[in-house]
Every structure is written in structure tokens, then in C-alpha cells.
Length: 335
Image (cartoon, rainbow, N blue to C red; front, side, top):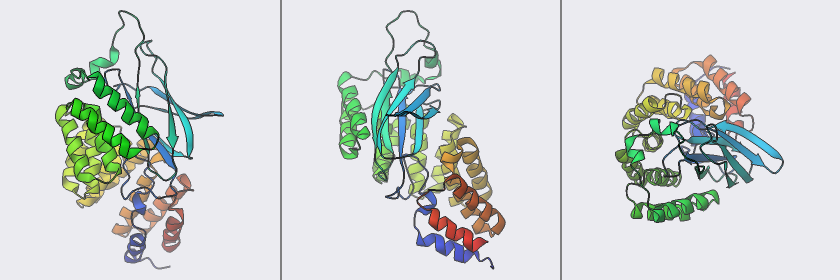
């Protein structure tokens, strides 16, 4: 069969948003498909509300036992993808040096409803003279945060509501937390992330920029702002923001993925290719979407062989993806 990249790109346009439909991130370009698997995106934070700046073990449990194990990044963030709908328990094992009690949180995952956001507070053990190892890597802006109890109660309420799938109520609780304590860094970030889920991009950007102003070295709001800008097709600014995010967390597959999208958006195909490859190398099968992005990039170049390999690899890693049938059609046209 002869290869005409214009025909393939036309087929892509028939399925709007399919290129990004399986990112598993809390901010899905084009929105999640209604039959997409569920996911959990979480933050582990210290008792004062600042992110935990070290990797800790995260166990995902169902009634029958362990479901999955992952680790937080250096900003206390974790993601659990491709989950069936149902009730889960997320357990945080942060007791490596005897500082914190074992923490757990029940989370309801809804199929096709977008990632469930959850924030888990660590509780420090009652003991004297312990060394606060992670505090050495937390910025001064974070350490200066003295969150009023009323603001923390609203933030906790927002986290619970989000875990129950009540996004609008969670957003309102976050707004109340920020009204009480305008410098509440993690509340600004989480509000921005939830507004992004609702595709309220302008408002999301305002909240995320507020978080960055409070602490320019906070990774999560930099990443989330980069995602907002990609969604708004402001690729030049997105590239700059995501470069800053990668300077803070070079091993973040999500940051590499969106940096690739931004690069392609400003016609830097070679840079986009490197970023997509890095996203998949670092993130593995949960970031199989990067293979799909690579396939599209190769098609634009007219590289039939590399596009075919990328799409086939994507289906091997995500055989039950909501867009599998469309990708199979692309493969059939490329063969």
C-alpha cells in the first residue's frame, strides 16, 4: 500500500484528542474518554502542608491485597494509572528513618471521570531529637508556611471531597482555604490542577502562577502551568515553563512528555522527539502515550517505518487503550 502522510493525518483529525487520550495524568489534553480507565494522582505532604521532598513507598490496596507499588518523586507526587473503577486504599510508608506514622487514605476511582486527586498528610511521631532530613531540601518559602488551622481544615475537606469525586465542592473548599491563608502554596497548586481538569484554563493559570510566585522552586505548579499553556496552545511560553520544571525535576516523565508537545508546537521536531523518548524511557508503560506522539511526529516527517514501529509499540504496551481501534486503523494504512 502506498504511503500518503496527508491521508494518515486526515484520519487523526477524525478522532479529536485521541493522541493524548491515555496519558494517565491529572491533566489530560483533550479530556479523558468516557470509557478510559481510572487513575489516582496524589501528593504526600508534611504536617505543615509542604510537599515531602524525598521518595517514599506508595502501596495501592484493594480487598484482596496489594494492587500496585510506586514511589513519590522529590516533590511528594505520585501517579497510579490504568485502574478499574472501585474503592482503593492508598498507603504511604514514610517510616524509613522513624519520623512519621504509617498513613493511609481511602480513594474512590470512577471509570472515565478523570484522575482522582488526593493529598495525604503525614503525622510525625511523638519523639524528641529527631533529625528532619527532608527539611534540608525544602525551600525557605515552604518552611515559612504556617498554615492556620481553619485553612488546613478546608484543605483537608477539599482533599476528602476530591477523593469522593466531588470536584466542584472540592474547588470551593480550596477557594475558602486560600481566602483564609492567601499564601497557601499547595492549595493554590491543587486548585489550579482541579480547574485544569474542568478546562478552566485562565483561572487555573492564575492559581498556578500564584503558587510559583510564593515559591519559584516548587516543581508541581511549574509542571501544571506548563500543561495549562500546552492546552492553550501557547507553546513558546509552555516550553520555557517546562524547561524550568525539568531543571527542578529532571527525571519527571510528565514534564518531558509535555515539553515534547511544546517543542512540536513550535516546530522543534528534533527536540520533541528527544523529549518523547525521555518520557517513555523514564516512565515506562504508563507513559506509552509518548510512543503515540512519536508516531504522529514521524508521520509528519513522512517516516513510514518509524511511525509504524511507534504505533505498534504503543499497542503492545496499551492493548486495551480506548483508542486502540483507531491506532489499529493507522497501522493498517501504514503497512
